[in-house]
Amino acid sequence: MPIENIKIAGAGPAGLSAAINLAKAGYQVEVFEKNHDTGVRFHGDLQGLENWSREKDAIDELHDMNIKSTNFNYKGFNHLIISNGTKNWDFICDRPAFYLVRRGNIEGSLDIGLKEQALDSGVNLHFKKNPPEDLTNIIATGPVKSEVYIIAKGKTFETDADDIALGIVNNNAAFNGYSYLLIADGYGCMCTVLFDRFKDASKCFEKTENILSSLVDFNIRNPKKMAGLGSFSNKNIFRKDEKLYIGEAAGIQDLFWGFGMTNAITSGFLAAESIINGTDYVETAENYFKKKLKASMVNRYIWEKVGSKDYSFIVNRIHNSKDSLKYLKSFYNFNILQRIIYPFSLMYMKKRYPNLRL
Image (cartoon, rainbow, N blue to C red; front, side):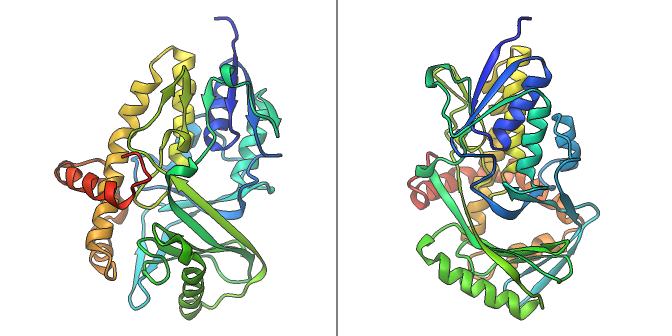
């Protein structure tokens, strides 16, 4: 097969995942990024590669998709604490519930690790440059700003405190969302994640900081502001004008809690595989993602309708299950109950999030 030149717009996890796999298969690959480098929209944020929605371990999945885990830092957490401000739940899992990675244009981050792997695979990276629009093959440009449903506001910092993963479900700290304190190896991230009332982000973060300070003794050095956003669609664009769309550019996210990194990387891998093997990316992506996306919409509906008072009902159900991660995994299978609830959740979500294509 003759070597083709593939052009990708966007040097995030989705775009670089596609680029690495295509380059390893012998394609000439060019990635165009509008910013001056990889990961610059993040500022050392700690983010989670969730490890509950699939059967296989998240790091093993990365290896299966030709992504090495040797040149970026990650740490698994088997122990986490959830609090609603008055009650705390301790979770001890048999395997890591998630792996923390750092995001941004800094040494040891996932973004720089993927960039280095792309360069080692022979990918040509072009920064502060857009690709020729009519020749672009893959669109991986990240969140669609008109379809934002989630924002994050917080700070990163250095600390002497012990490692911890503490989540807060409290509408004063994060309306319909959650807040968290994550500390790993002397580095921390404290954040509020909102699914509504974005204008109250500063007030919510102040409340978050107060709650966390009352629960945990930790010091903060060299704090830096961080922020983020996410977009979602249930009417996904996987192909348009012969271009393949991946990651949040295709609307792929988790409407429930917003854990999207593994999905982004997977979508890039599937797009690359479709080019390499001559298969239909749209069919493959729909088979892989559609049920997950619908399940996440039902999960968000239940979270907001049932848990909005103090979230204890839902958290108790998860905590009291024999295997918390296995129980969580059942939330992502679009099971029979979710299929029954789906039409009601769709009506609710269309009113609740009118800017989203649902």
